[in-house]
Image (tube, rainbow, N blue to C red):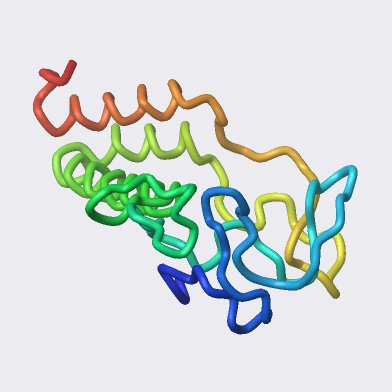
Length: 156
């Protein structure tokens, strides 16, 4: 869900302009430090509403990069990567569904609610182990396997 892409001015929270290169919190209420979860607060999210950062920041010129266009956020880069991965999977699936499914099952054995819900009144989170790798090289290796299916084994 993306509700905004350049929410530099927190009009809803009443905090006004945000120096996005020095303060990741762009939306929500006041925050407090939490030993388990870090900096948290009611309806507060780092980078919420930002898909692009200003290349040239005229409101906070001391922190401006002075570039002629927007800078992509990490969210935007992850979104792009997800779209690319879906394209790889679709192309590989058309060539070899069995091998493609094996790669997918190896990387994402369970999806969504994999460990159930501890509190039915607040099903938004549960502290538990995840079922997929957090090692970037594992994901790159899976992508290479998909590329090999697509190009007949000639990917690097």
